[in-house]
Structures are given as structure tokens and as C-alpha cells.
Length: 185
Image 1 (tube, rainbow, N blue to C red):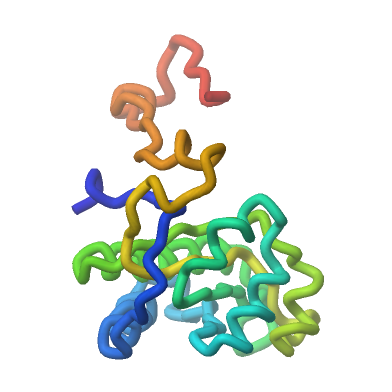
Image 2 (cartoon, one colour; image 1 turned 180 degrees about the vertical axis):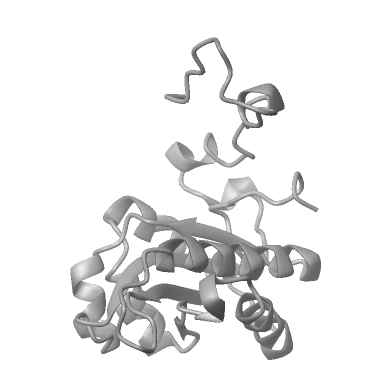
């Protein structure tokens, strides 16, 4: 499942079944979180009017391909625990929820592409998210994967899974390796 999941830019405009979308949000709901705080609510768009509004949050380059996705999602993180203490793990926990959402989509044949390049400040007003309590993190384009040829020519070359670092550069038993590990690529 993991190697098969990647972030396409080519989406078909056909609707995502409500049951599939519900299952994806349900998977996100069950993601692990520090003290079970579950700090990662999602705001999503499926109607033409809402999709147009959400698209304004995307940077122009991403807006070009995200416009075809039938669902757009924004994930935010609640920055404090219920008792008012700061939650330093909120973004990490939100990442677990986003990954759960994406993996459930993969199981259902629904593609996802997570982007951090959004107008975070505009998200608060546009989506009515309380900026004093939440941090806008990312957007997710959701839909059935389309063929590469439906993209503009300059984006077609990007339509493939991204490479991953070899395992020996990711996991170290016992201690950090004695040799320098370059994580800049």
C-alpha cells in the first residue's frame, strides 16, 4: 500500500463517493495523537462554489492542477490542549491524521495530493477558522487519478512517484551513524 501511494496532479473531475470520503475522514479521526487530543479538524469543499473559494488558497502553480479535483480539503491543528496548555505535538498529530486520510483513500482507489504551499493567513478568514486557536497547515486535493496527458505540458513531466531515500539513510539502530548522513536531498 505505501509504495503504491503517491501524489498525482492529474485528477478526474468525477465526484468522490460520499461513503469513500466519510471513510477517509474516519481513518483520520482514528489517527494516534498525543494525550488523545485529536487536534486536527478538516474543512472540505465539494460544491462548485466552495471549490472555487478553496482554490484561492492554492499558490498559482498548484491551482492549475488542483482545479480538476472534485474535493479540496484543508487541515488545521488546534494549538492548545482542552485545558489551555500549549500542544507542541499538534502539527505532528495532524500529520498522522493526514497520512491516515491519504492511506485510506489509497485503499479505496481515491488519490490525494497534499500541499503546504497555500495562503495560510487567508485560510482563517475564508474558512472561518479561529486563528487564535488553530494553525492552518495544508490542503489536500482528492479525487480519482487521471492520465498524465490531461495536464498542461509543463506539468506532465512531474506526474510520477517521487523517489525515496534508501532505508539505510532513514533508520539507524542504536545511535546516530558515525558517518555524516546528508538529508538535504
